[in-house]
Image (cartoon, rainbow, N blue to C red; front, side, top):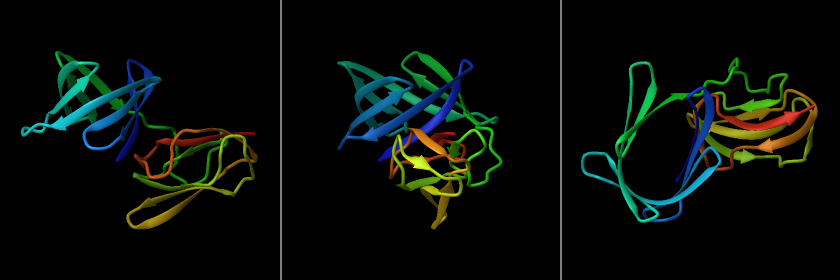
Length: 165
């Protein structure tokens, strides 16, 4: 299991990624912070979390305006889904950002950091609704960052990689 989503928190973009390390062990990255923890689902749907010998209970709920309220211990965090400026087309915009055009799973990343790419070149493939969607470079340039990896579930608007002219 792997999960990645971009949020807005206190005016800043925040990427949250969770990767299963087997059984109830997880690696969770919140921005630049990496956490190793144990998590189990309680009968009422909350999570029991153990991190560095401390125990927490966590719960999350969506509001009517699609904000995510995360209650961790005695603190509540309000996260808003990060919506990238995108027309939903499968090619990168002129700024070289490759975005997920819809919620799906990354089937293939066809480039690595440092690769030269041409406009129209397939740089990644996303599966959604039992179909494969080729994500194309919108500009000629160099891949400067790959943010996601194969097998990761992403939401619409998630930045997958960045190309600079």
